[in-house]
Length: 390
View 1: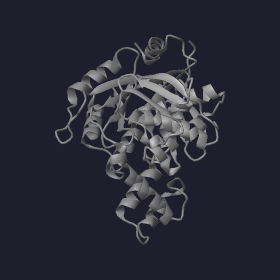
View 2 (view 1 turned 120 degrees about the vertical axis):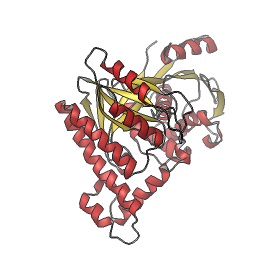
View 3 (view 1 turned 90 degrees about the vertical axis):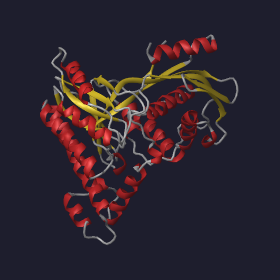
View 4 (view 1 turned 90 degrees about the horizontal axis):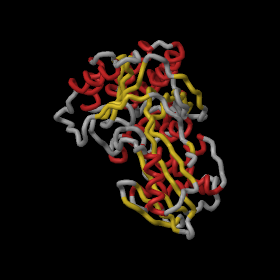
């Protein structure tokens, strides 16, 4: 039973009525353009056929009560500090806080609801962003307000940055809010302009969940972001989006610059170029070029940005050795979690052959043991967030 049906069934069982609003938001995977979003650069994600769904109705008091399938329930008022709310419900609470802070909803309404999800947790597929976007849709629907994908995404990003303590960019939320079925989305993370790119025929993206997990807040993620800010400041730029290859060469000679500044900046500059090149490859149907760019991206993330890990490297290597693989790379914040493969899809069973071959080749490395089973998810680009009619 999918997340939509479970949300409806759970709501009806809990409240013996029909929900006033049912909102859904998908997870995402990033085809290319990693760690460029918080540098005002370009990213190329697609939405996945996995949703977080919220069925809700207005509350009769100022108490907001919500139950999450498998994670228990929580009750709070929006006058409270969201930092004091239990971990998963903190996202729900904080979205209401940020909708008010952004000036979208002066007095966000309290509501009762249930949350379900199909998004595999911990696999770098942005389950938290999907929760933020779906929650924002509930608040705005009950308030009679309509927001653009960019506005929804900015609210979610502020939740991550200011409440959850992760200095992330806007990629995850904007991909969840603004994607279109059958298309990848080129996002300009400075202007928030979206450009839909038809996904080329003859290929499928397979998400590779290594079964390893990481907590971004406790990782080196924040250090990477801080290093990029420092590098841009040394160059006198607003962000590394504005840097050129000549600037990177100049950076190496500046006072205070270390090799880490040069390496991180070089990755960002080259990754932005790879991302726009990938768009051209997709538009021309050049799958071999797209696959090669994905491999280059992984090598840069591994060697220059240093956010890969033993399991991610192992599964990418195994994928590239497997039948029908065109390209592969780690995806998401890094260190553990998930990767993706671009796989030839002849309409027969070429994707199944790839998956069987890869599962026979990949084993979690002993230096980074898995805490969950390795899983593969063949996917085509899906629709972004929206409402479900009941």
